Image (cartoon, rainbow over all chains, first blue to last red):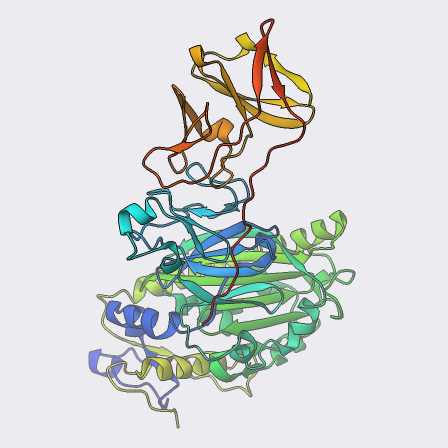
Amino acid sequence: MPARNHKRWNEVPGELREGEYIDSRIYSDRAIFEEELAKIWKKSWIVACHESEIPEPYDFRTTTIAREPIIVARGSDNQVRAFLNVCPHRGNTIENRPSGSFRNGTASGAPRHMTCMYHGWQFDMKGNCTHISREKEGYQNRLSRNDLGLRRLRCEVHFGGFVWVTLDDAIGKTVEEWGAGCFDCLQKHVDAEPLEVFHYHKAIIHANYKLWHDTNSEFYHDYLHYHNRITGFNDAYFARQNTGFENGHVTVGSFEVQYDKYEGFESRESLSFPGLPPNHWYMIDMFPGVNFNLRGSALRCDIMTPLAPDRVLIEFRGLGLKSDTPEERMSRVRHHNSIWGPFGRNLHEDLLAVTTQQAAMNEHAEPRRILHGRHENNTIHDEIGMRHFYDEWGRWMNRRPSDPEKPYAAAA
Amino acid sequence: MTWKRVCSAGDIEPGRLAPFVVDGITVIVANLGDDGFSVFPPSCPHMEEPLDQSGICAGLILTCSKHLHQWNMRTGEPTGPEENDRELLRYESRVEGGELLARIDGELVYEHEDDEDDDFEW
């Protein structure tokens, strides 16, 4: 096929139709990015952390959702609650550490309370304001601590102990309803007994968050993965099905992986999750940006936090069973790292791919088309996962992914 | 009523405070200089701040540095600019033969509410 001049380059290639390609501006445009935070990220259930990261009463974890600081804390009643990590007084960040415990107090505050270090205002684990200085002298009867509770956020511990938070009080859906069945394939296996995070790392990637979601949403980029190309494939690998669910979620069906055929790998026959046959591989991509990836003995969860059109913070967690023996845990860690560790099979290659993708579609580049047009009976060669995601994206944004200047229209 | 040895009078410099454990009960001892000693429980009457870390002595006045609540260590009365209606509980004490003795029959404790009720509504 010949190279194309500028005019031909800008035409829709071949006979691709609406929904089978998207406009690169949705990965790079600043206004669209800000709109995504407002219309999608502030309106969805987002995973903040896993409950095993705050195992004891008064443990906390901080994060952000759509640039809003969030704190998740476990109360003396063992319930996990989420709040805006913002003092109602002068708007300071209350807790600056990523995690810790309030049990013994902080440098400027009382035990078992959150403390704003600026003026010593205190809040309990339920978000009640329990101390402000000179309450009566300063505010007479115009304002009291009863008026000054924290901004509480809807929070649920669900789908294997993950802590879900939303900024939208009026979301109108439980996390279960939000999942719309996409977690059915794993739910009973990850809810049978408590899970525990054994691996955590985070990275700021120079890519739009959707590019990372894309790379998790199709499985035929094995051209990228040297080790995948040379070992471990079988027909069942390619026969797996992508399934779309309401709210933009997609799952990839499992198959029995021959881990012992991977060069340098061992079988995962002896270790799995409760009730789950060994050596399987499930993938759940949830809208707008969390991915669950269970490979036999290790569950991985990627949580994305978009920072800018071309920046995404990805937090990677590896999980096993809380009841693991030390030997079982070591196996899970080894299996996790062999795929997803820094010297693992493919994580770094995926990161490289999305980074170079973003470099070519920077905000000053001419808009161009990104093709999602493969149809192969919904198998992993099919780009149905991305089409499903972008249809949902268009609905939430009221923009057409193929031409974001136009309002959303359902694909034919 | 038992008088128990807490420490030697020379163990703490005037104007300082320090924790001691007497028969399993932790107390704070403050050396008030010419005004003798004050012996009181280790947590702040306000919100259980650990006074061995947060307590500051100045003359007779104890200040908890966390929320700037203050007490007169001789009388236990609250004082200072912060609103505070809680008394500082104290153990009776005296010096005898260079040893500080305190009357400790049981641990003095403040009542603190646990978390307030969760009567939050969406």
